[in-house]
Image (tube, rainbow, N blue to C red; front, side):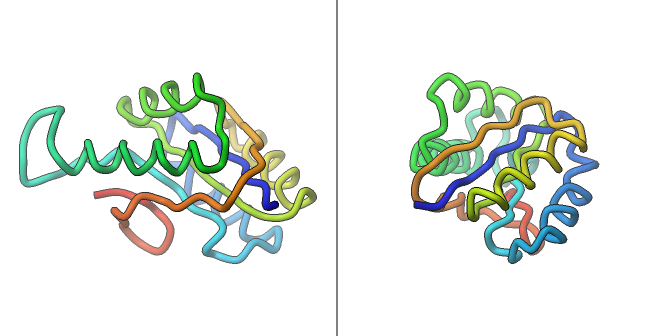
Length: 132
């Protein structure tokens, strides 16, 4: 069963560097993904549909990889305050290397999970940044 490491970053400005460094470890582009809370929508307010859909999809993805229940809520709260998540799925060795890379880049939280590859939210920007 694949492993996935999830890293939480308070400053999304560094996420592209993190993703690039993890890909340099031999990860293909698809198994390395970054997620941020949607920042724009056609609707206004905290309860806009893109935000609700994004959060529901992200909860499903985190549950699928067996992220700790308490961490799921904390991840969502940090994303609401401008943070980013980086996911990397692969072998045990690659996941450990990706976790080390995340820590070197200042991840606030790093969690390694075992479970099916996450099905990420359907809202994308760029090649691997998930947003509205």
